View (spheres, rainbow over the protein chains, first blue to last red):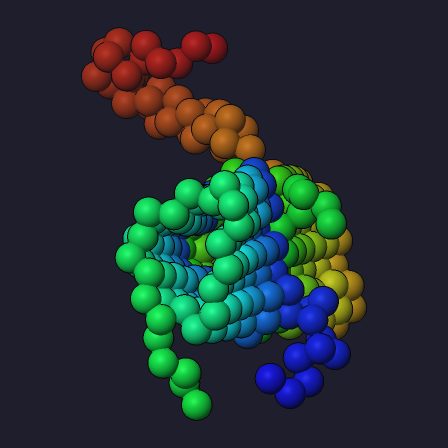
Length: 114
Length: 138
């Protein structure tokens, strides 16, 4: 992840709250989801905000969920906020679930990549 | 962070369908059909697909069929496909390899077609009777 910090603003993607997307997204940088996406997401860091809604699989390094997710989540760090709602599967190396979060998922720890 | 502004970052790749967006900025690679109010394709951006928008600003690469009220093609823009516009601004250096059509308004072009038909219809109508002549209101 060299040089990532210098360029975060340019690498950042936002799906705004009024936006609806169908399809695959892959990004090198950060992705903020305020709208609704049907499809798979692959990126460095994903944050599903309160208004965000995702139906699909996530493959990321860091995942932060305060909205709704349905599908398979695979990430190094998974954090689910109190307003978060997840169903499906979660593969994590490091997980945190805040009180109040709704999790209906199969949760399993994956082995460190390195 | 503005809620309504959607951004696709420089390293992002997307293919699929985008709807309901008010304003979108594309710095990555997008393959989609898009209907929105304002689109900006940044200098690192590449867009393939249909665009239907009020305002389009292009500094990157575009390929597809565009329908827009107002189009601004900056000096680094590269366009191929089709551009239907009402007002167009083009900077020196913009590279166009496309069909450019002013006034895409469907009603206007429909009227034009109808007039054309009426001319044809009038000629045929004279020979064949009133069948074609009904659409001729002159």
